[in-house]
Image 1 (cartoon, rainbow, N blue to C red):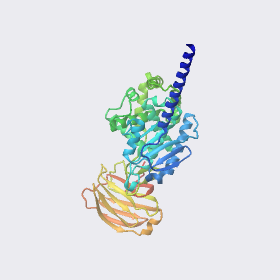
Image 2 (image 1 turned 120 degrees about the horizontal axis):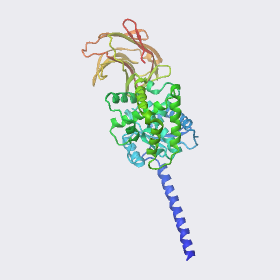
Image 3 (image 1 turned 90 degrees about the vertical axis):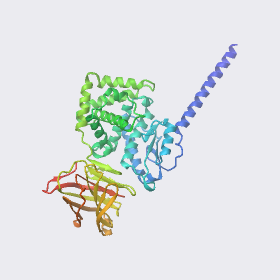
Image 4 (image 1 turned 60 degrees about the horizontal axis):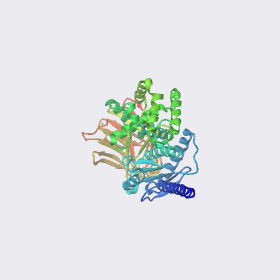
Length: 475
């Protein structure tokens, strides 16, 4: 009888062990399987492997550089090493392929987010443009990539990560991605619209008296909400973490406490209820009698943080380390960056030096618009023509003059536009090209901006001078 019982126990132990091995194999196969219907190019960096659609092949080197740099920075923050096993990233240019991957790996929870990370594998949707070229701002793609890789390294290194509260995971991912994109320079909220939009949205939320109390923000799920409310959650979490983790010397003690808090909660068990425990610990450190002071600091931080002074349509607009403004567009796409400061004078000049790439670019623009930026006049310079056109849902050409095609075979040029009421005078490399009286009664110069088409253009020494010679550089 004892022999039969021992045999049954051995068989039961064997069956249990075999079952666990099968479950592990099934889980590993599921977690590492390729996304459905994926096809594209594959590129490998030091720490990542990127599967990208053909339209992104021209940007792949920039994406690899961003990914490797971000991961090395995160590893340093976390005090962990990067193994030889690369992090996989999948980019999609078809909505159905991204949604299919989201359904397969994330139960369709993040379909509206346009990016998610599961099992340390990142999936990002990149909106396609004409002829398969990407319409999405390459900087936005880089920022999204850096954000998802922050999730990825946490998921790989810390089993409890997916049990932490959303505000902490998403806030840290945005803030550390911004720091990685800044590369130890000025914060990206000052240099690009991607991060400054968070501040502007939260400023608007504060003005409408809809700012969430910390208790509601820290307990909220960030999925399955309307676009606006989800944006509010992400923005408020980003600013909270950014304030706590600010590297400025005056914040050194608070940052040290916050980093200690992160190290502590990363060691918590991967179990239900961990998010509640994390929030309780956060309240213990930063809440209680200090909570009112924290909210006061939060409001002050939002108010006093300098943000990007340009509003962009399409493409990439970004301030470089030397203060120049970079604009990039893609095939058959025009980008315009409007300065946010209202122009109240009627006699002024806009002056700049430009550096164009590739040589022979289609168009460089100086733009004047109404307050809503939906009705504008563009003074354009190209390899064949220079002229003035109006856009108000459709284009109207007010006149043009021929350009020597050889002029645009060199990269660097000088542009000057003089506006006196409805009278425009434009010079290119010191030569007057346009002298136009705009008879359109809806002509407006409340805002001004710059742009380009099918090219990358760096605008340096970009400034506005009033008729009396006063100098105003964008800031």
